[in-house]
Amino acid sequence: MESIFSLFAQYTLVEWLLTGSLLLLFLIHLLFCILLYRKPYTYERKRKVPAVAEEELPGISVIISSKNNSEELAKNLPFILEQDYPLFEVIVVNCGSTDETDMVLKAAEQKYPHLYHTYVPADSDGTNEKKLALTLGIKAAKHEILLFTEAYCRPVTARWIREYGKAFLQERDIVLGYSRLIIEKKVWMRQFIHFDNLIHHLKFIAMALAHKPFMGIGRNMAYKKALFYGNKGFSPILNIEGGEDDLYINRIARGKKTGVVMTADSMTDTRGIDSFFTWRSIKSKYLYTKQFYRGFAFHLLGVETVTKYAFYLAFLAIVGLAIMNAAYYLAAFALLLAILRFFVLLVIINKNSVLFDGSKYHLNLFLFELFQPFNNLRFRKYANRRNNSRR
Image (cartoon, rainbow, N blue to C red):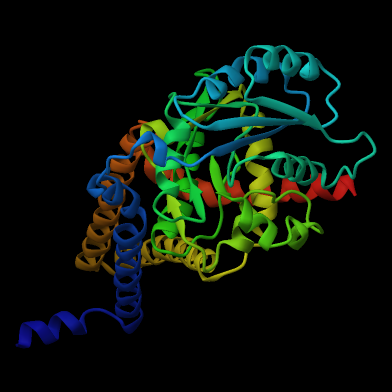
C-alpha cells in the first residue's frame, strides 16, 4: 500500500490531470474508430445478397450535367449506356458548352436509343446553372429513381445501375455510393489524395449506416423523384452556390430511409485528376458548402477532429513534463496509448481501404491524419476566395 501512495506522490497534480485527459481522449477516439470508421467494413462483410428477379427491378433514370466535357463524355458514356440492366435511360444536360459536346451527344443518340439530351438556355443564372441543369434532367426523367454521376466519371463495372436497383427494392428513399479517384502516378501527394477521399466517404457512409445521413456525393448517388418534388426541388439551397449534391442531401435526408451501396459493382471511377490542383478544385467545392451543413452527425464529426488534436497536444505535454521531471512511467504510459490508438486506426482504415480503393497505409497514416484538417482549412479558404470573387 505504501508503494502505491509513494507512486501517486511522486507525480504532480498537473501530470495526473494531463494523463487522465489523455486516457479520456484515447477512449473517445477508440469509440470513433469502433463505432464509426469500422462500420462500413463490418456492414459489407455481414451483408446478405438476396436473389432478385429481373422483372422486380425498378426503372432508373441516370442524370448527368455537362459543361465543356466533350472528351470525357465520349470516353465515359459508353460505360453508362451499356449497363447490364433491364430498364433504364440516360439523360445528359448540356450546360451551354462551347466545345463539341452537342456533336458527341447527337452521335451517341444514333447508337443508343435510351440516351436523351437537352440543354440549359444560354441566358440562365450562372450561379445556379448546375441546379437548373439537374432540374431539367429530373423533369425529363421517365422513371421514379434518379441516379446521378458526372461526365468525368464512369462505372467500375456494367452492373452499377443494378446495384442501385437492388438497393431501392429495400424501400429506400436515398442511396449513397462510393466514388474512387483514378490518379496518375506523377501527381504530387497522390497517396494523400486517396486517403482523403477514403476518409471523406467513410464518414458520410458510416453516418448513413447509423441512420444519421448528412451528405452525399453527386458522382455516385441516387434518390426518388418524389423526394425532389416533395422538397420543392433545389429551392432550399438556391441562395448558396453549389451544394446540389452534398448540401441538398444534408437538407432532405433527415427522417428519410437512406441506404448505401459498397460493392465493387456499385462504385464509380473519377478520372482526369492530372494534378494536385485539379483535385483541389473538386475538393474545395465540398469544403465551401460544408460550412452550411446542419444536423447532429456533422457536429459529431467536428468533435472527432477536435479531440484528435487534443489527444496529440496532451501527449506532447505529458512527454515534455515527464522528460523535465524524470517521470518516465507517465511518458511510457502516454506512448503506449498513442501506439495503441495508431494501430487500431491503422487496422480499421486498411480493412476499409481493401473494400474500396485498395490503397495500403503504414506509418504515413500518422502524417496523413495530422495533415488532413490543415489541408481542408487551406482549401476552404481558397474556395471562399474563389466563390467571393465570382459574386
